[in-house]
Image: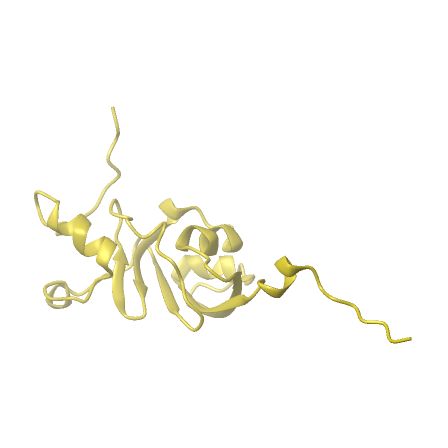
Length: 140
């Protein structure tokens, strides 16, 4: 008599997505190195179909703590403009989180590549999302 063990169907569909995650400045503490203030590079495993919000939850990082964010070299978020929360991440994606005090050279701001969600948010913005300084906006 031959016995076979079959995994439940849902286990067959459970695949991991590896995200190449870079945390710069004070955000490096979310990489498990609280004393590190320069950068940390992590390989973060998410379930297939994971979103930016899932990556932030895995890192236990509040989205308000991140400044400029890039996905595969394309701008995905800035302080006060974070349309990437539901952006799906794919295996091998590189995500870079910069802290709020990080400077982004002005000459790189115009013509920067953006994810579709960011491009839509910028196009719908009165000031095209460009500022010399950023501050929290109170919602009434």
